[in-house]
Amino acid sequence: MKVKRTEIDRVSISLPKTLLEKFDQLIEKKGYENRSEALRDLIRDLFVEEEWNEDVEVAATVTLVYEHNTTGILDKLTNIEHENLNNIVSTMHIHIDKENCLEVIALRGKASVVKSIGEKIISIKGVKYGKIVKATTGKNVD
Ligand code: NI
Image (cartoon, rainbow, N blue to C red):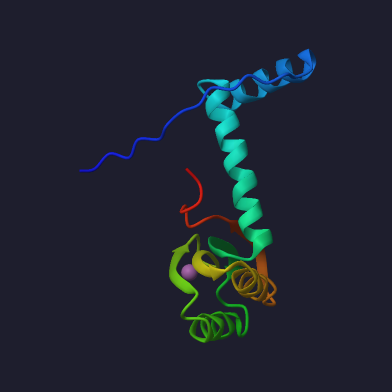
């Protein structure tokens, strides 16, 4: 197996004392082992946000909660999935209880296209909860 090694540079940054104290408390609460790992994640997040702004190839998930008995909801969802089969790559369906379903839909493609499909899915009548998680293909995030 080929192991990818990333060259590391060290930087020092200046921060207001109180901001650094709050940052340390927050990252400890979140479980980070050190400041570097927390900062790397924040920086990567900025790059992912920029990928979406630049409308390049991205990945995303749409999480939905709905009642499967709601009239027409399954047909509408299936229609959207078939209309966008090049962008919708996978769907996971979990039956939460007798009425409620949890669905996670994975998408990839141009950011604007993925966003528009996600919004179309979330706005289907009867969706109780819907959220798009803007992710990345990972190519430009080391
Ligand atoms: Ni179900």
